View (cartoon, rainbow, N blue to C red):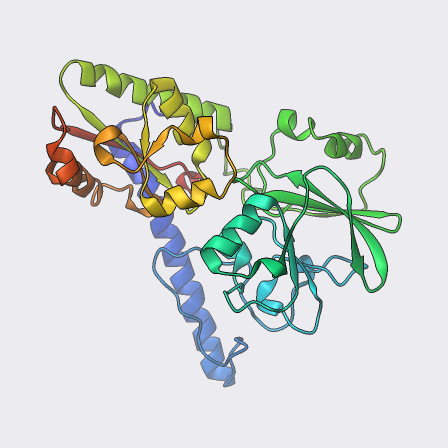
Length: 355
């Protein structure tokens, strides 16, 4: 799927973001007009929430009462509902460390215990400054008893196949089983390798309720598999490396979130047997994931040691990419290079490409 010309690929990358932004602006304008006509607004504070161009829409934004899809039936549990913290509960569940899910958590957090995976707990403490006494990491694939209104509820964390530390929560409330997937990526082979999911798929036992991530639940999203996307990226990078051997040295930029997209750039780097440059902030984040030393050894904070750089996803565009090329060649690190970079190739791994 990378066989199309670069120009067409660019159009695909940019058209989705333009359409999304235009739609969001229209929706925001419409809501403001309705508020003016009725003399009311929908925010808890009475102030219009800020909208930044290029920002993600949060499914965690406070807007009146806590929505039902954040409340686990038969319990007082809230899942990814931190803007609604207060009198509802002391038990909070965080599926993963992406801002549209952890929104509402600050370093002043004292509303109750946050249950999550160990990597997510490390990131919440390190990046958001939450005291460790409010964080309770749970083991993977093992039921843990959490009390809700003097009722014992079994909670099991299952791999969501999303970003590092991302989990699905399987709640067993009495005889009822409830699965909250957070953000997940369905892959039949991976998911059915999880004993609990395999048993539920066979209706033994039966799943009673499912909280489902439907981000790409639309026929227009004909996404390649993760394996296909990684293989295509490796092919493109390998072709560029062949050009480098003929004298045209290439700088590779991989766009990434705070966490997320690690699979694709690690796969390319391991195939090419090259190191990966990350800044000191990202290195601290990666260390918080608890990866083995063998995997961490591929990263460096010295630009001259790597031709693969990890940069913010939004910076992988034709306006900003030349700046990275200039930075690589003209910085102190660039002067240490034996040969200058002549080309820059960016990888922007996101399903929104197909919007």
